[in-house]
Amino acid sequence: MAISSRSRKILWARSGNKCAICQVNLIRLGGQKENVIIGEECHIISKSIKGPRGQHKIECANHDDYENLILLCSNDHVEIDHDFESYSIKRLKEVKRTHENWVKERLNSNPQEFNNPLSDIIILKKVEDANDIIEILKVCSGHILDYQKLKREKVPKEILILFDYIKDVVDVLSFMNYSQFEVMRLDLNNLIDEIENHGYLVFALQQKIDVELGANKSAWDVVNIQIIKSENVSIVGDYLFALYQTSKVIF
Image (cartoon, rainbow, N blue to C red; front, side):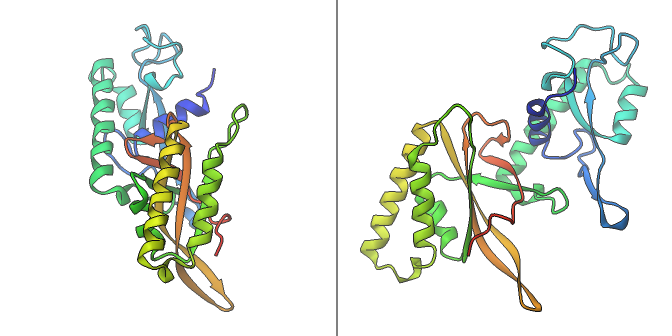
């Protein structure tokens, strides 16, 4: 049985795309400007009884579950499997737990540390109220709007209403008077509350996008809003690890 997409997403998101031991970024620029992934999804207890720590029983359903995996660079992977007596199950689980707690703390203090431009991953912060969106909208000229699509669940209408609202106000925000501004704030807060009542969370980011204008290229600010189910495995604390998307930018 191979590592599932769900286990892989949990592992990479909670590890912040960094090695749990040396904390090096696990995506680098290689030859010919191609991205190289040096991260390895390592088993704490080997699948083979003859492998590192393989004589011990796993506490999860199978060896490829997130609970039996730790994200490492290739050098540290070799180290833990070569010196498996020093790197016991207890020690590796503690290394993993300590690293994931460190990621949570660093996300709260400096989320941009995890925005590796080579990884096509961006970090969006959870929207607490309308002010979080409005502050971004004030300086943005375009938007990226997306939500998690589920096969067996109808999209809450409030998500689509919120997106339409943002499309309508992004160009006219600076022309609103105080009364109009307060109505907008109230409407946005009500929509955010209703969306959360449906089990979704709203995440936002002010993002720079390179736009080609004839022979010139210019960086434009856009608001990126992603609405995701609250139990989504790409959520770590108050942050969402999402794919960098430029194809959905609308100005």
